[in-house]
Length: 110
Image (cartoon, rainbow, N blue to C red; front, side, top):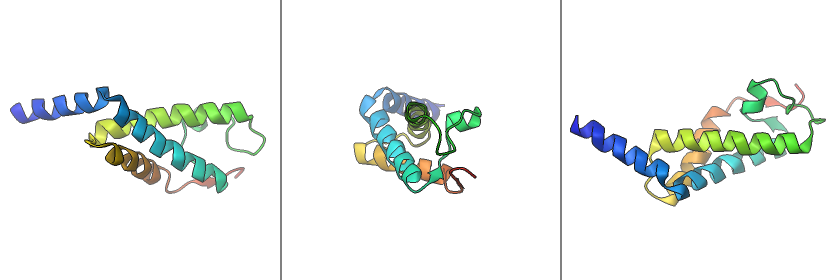
């Protein structure tokens, strides 16, 4: 029971720390940008909700909003899953977890 409480407290402490959330957010956001630039549609919340972000005619503000919201949700999941202790760990966890989740992505418009 003591080990569980220690793990729980470390996760809560990591979640409360804004710098880890921000680092994971930046990692996820950077990978989202790279995927979009390569013409791939990354895993996103809006796509799951059938909001048009897939084709090249999607509105730019909708794509930006999707990038931000999806990256925030990804950062929260990464911090909960990995409990990083340093900022570089948080950034690489955001890149890595997002990369794993978006490994098999569709080309935009397909």
